[in-house]
Length: 278
Image 1 (cartoon, rainbow, N blue to C red):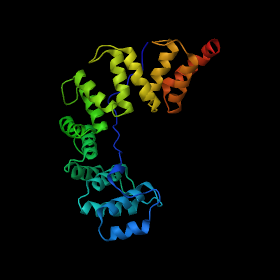
Image 2: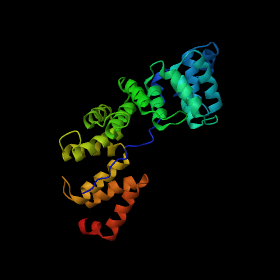
Image 3: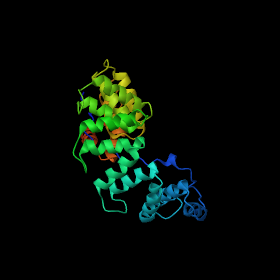
Image 4: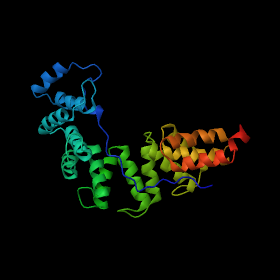
């Protein structure tokens, strides 16, 4: 049985808005009162208003106003505002997409030891977006971020050690970083761990543990894990064959665009496996 293997060379996710970093209540905000505080130069209010306009929580979404408030917060050296300004320039939210500007803001926040910004800047070096590709610099930044417990950076480091990018290939270190991220509930890390336990890379082969990690990731909507669970239930690996259960997981993955899941669904329908095992 061949499981769906994760492609470790991924376009890492950059967007991780640190909502926990501001204390403005955006559920039913008194916008006028927050604006008054912002006009007086209150940093929390400046960042909070930027976040509200950026996300559209409590106000009508307005990227221009968001940028205005974030820039005022940046003038007060807010690492959170610098990070989100980097996100805005990376994505082109209300501004012309500009990777160089994104890097400038990520660097300002990263220099203040802001874990999300370090991870994002590491991603820019990894991908070579707006800057020459540099795996060594990416490793350095991911490590700084991972050491602060940022799960995305831990996953990224795990992938680089798995592939041997900028470092010697080291499955044991890949496992260690995947585990740190998985223990925080990071679904993609749980999938990667499941794959490594299934294949016995860096750890003794343990299909039962692999299935546990696939299940945790699939429960969070991880597409590849859903495909793998579909295969496991279809083929009766570690569990009794259960075609309806297999179809359930394949359909969940297919709904997210998995071509392998769609292929398996068609095969099962054509072979009438479901009818024989209802």
